[in-house]
Image (cartoon, rainbow, N blue to C red; front, top):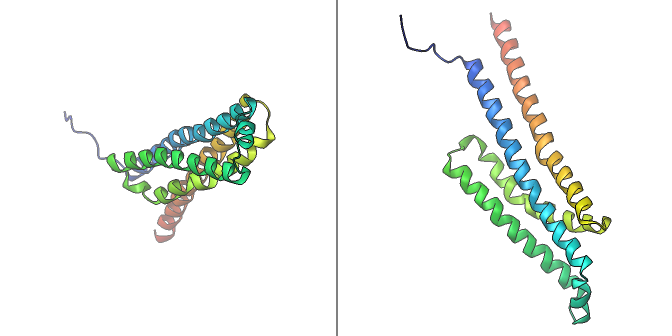
Length: 166
């Protein structure tokens, strides 16, 4: 009787990699979806309390107000993305280094859109729900679908290549 396990097959390794990729995409998508929701909540709270109006009466330029708010929100989001990228490095997720550049550009793309979408809503909860769901679909569902299709196509081409050669 032997207690040594059987060698791990390549098919199992591929399945394990697919599962870990989908799990990582899901966790990162949920975390990053909360950032714009927090920002849109702050924008609507500021509108409800008429803080923007107070600043405009005090002499603040409207263009400067929006540019500064967008810039500060981008910097805050970049700090969170930087922490996420450093965790990728600390855990040695070398297979995902291609995603780091996209993650660094993500706040620059999402924050201005979030500020623009804030004008569509009057209630904080509805804006946050819409922003969370939109970002989760864009950051989670679409990449998981693409990742699953890539693994499926890769497996299909491997099977076709092995049957063609044999």
